[in-house]
Image (cartoon, rainbow, N blue to C red):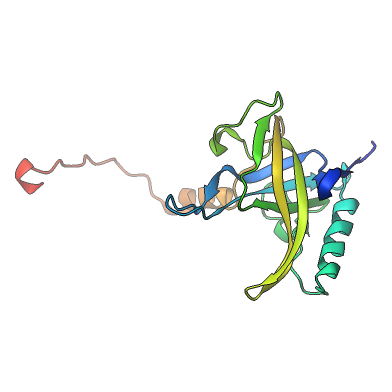
Length: 193
């Protein structure tokens, strides 16, 4: 099987290989305040190493870090899935990256290019393609490289990913809760309201 590679586009943009999405918050800002344009859009993209070659993206990240004078110890957005092997969809043979957008919302569309209306429509684990760029930062006590999300195409398919801890929470509930009768909740009197 031939690996998919990162495609270099114009103006410093890259089309990433088809991967899976997790923690999609790409339609509505996280932490947005209605009165100020704050917050961010973000998601994690996941690739199986045998299917995707991210070397072009990784070289661009190194180049951006070097250009800003960042040496070792900076935050790299492309990471080894073994760091989070307890999470569904991560582990050995997997690479993942956090992608973000701040000022400009990413364009998020379905396979037929119709707009995605809500983050709830995107199933964690489904396949996506993304157009991104890379920039390095060294401010506010933090230094690293970010992958900026410009556009995302949701292709569907894939196996749904379970959020971290779901299985452990099921086991806890099963072992620690006793079976009990459901009691009726009493309604307060009108004069108590």
